[in-house]
Image 1 (tube, rainbow, N blue to C red):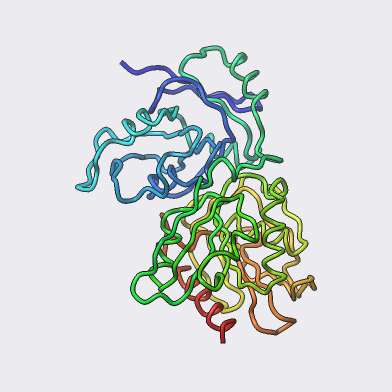
Image 2: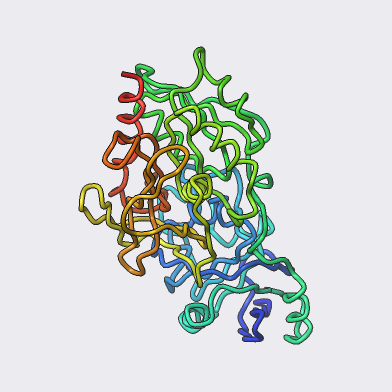
Length: 378
């Protein structure tokens, strides 16, 4: 017999459904993801820490859960909302059902919800706090607890998702470069894609200092990388200071997602919270340096506030917007050059070129990082 579940948004909108995954109660920021596949990568992406993910695809769980595709060692979402969960898993790679995995890891979810109505509500009103409960039957009482829960704005979360100790992902084949990668919520496929290109990746905790970065490798690192991650970039100050130190030393830099936002702040730009964010694997982005349009994977609720046209003088060089989302003109990438029209020094993108899960259109960015380090070494 199914267990009733209740979902209440902080503006009072209420949905009734059935328990999916663990029973109990959870709170977080309600966001929606438009991906029709890749739910396992979404669930294990540390960037979703403290977020309750609403899946817009109606059928979820069809391929179960396997041991090859997780992006981290655990599920990070605070809660999970689906419309019609699969009754059976139909993949030869599946080791257990999604429902069982959510239950095993204590993730409270709800099914049988009209996710189209819930998504439209979030699109119109914006991402907001939410509670899911299988123990509370009174929406008014659950609403009180939702409104007493923490907000995403102003929250620094990288310390909660980062590795506790440094580790090395060795280069595949001949080692060409050494990179210091600061883990702000890194996905497993990111260092893997760098290692496939001959990069030895030293993954450092979010608390790493400039001394820790410079100590990487025999002669120091060839480049610095900042990963994706959760939280408000405006509340994350130590890593911005670290990045400014590195930029001042002309250390080539590549940042993804949260790493793009912190790059923007290091260059003197502001950041702001998007109304409902970009989450999914089908977002169109133009690379202005090539004029090509990519279909890209996104997971971000904040964005960089930088002028779309022209360059901005910074203490480290000339900064400009390199990538733009074609849906809403949100800044999706930055680059730093020696001067207007000068050599590339550092760059970042707001989306996920590691394609886990998602399209492979943006994998070239890892090659661009390789070329950048090669050019700076020459």
